[in-house]
Image (cartoon, rainbow, N blue to C red):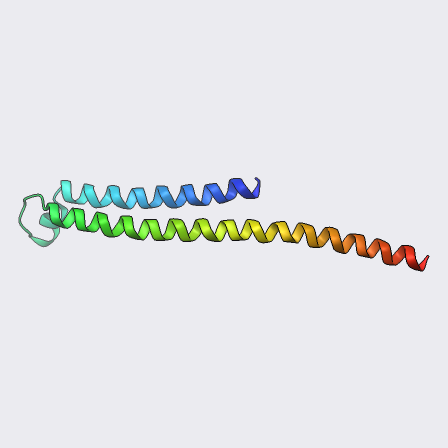
Length: 100
């Protein structure tokens, strides 16, 4: 699995997780779970479900963009590791040829 694929899979898993949280939020309101558990009125509460959805979407966006930025930074640093290892290998060869 390449590094770019693993970054995409991390973001995909986050998206699936937050989508499931949203689905559970709406399902709980549709089946009137607050009424069954806490004795609240049995009517559908739009304000509650939309407010919870808005908060979940805001957290989702923050987590998504933060993770995407960290993955991009990680890939950028990995490119430097390749350049540094190539330079170190070349410097080692130069040192051995200078002695010999």
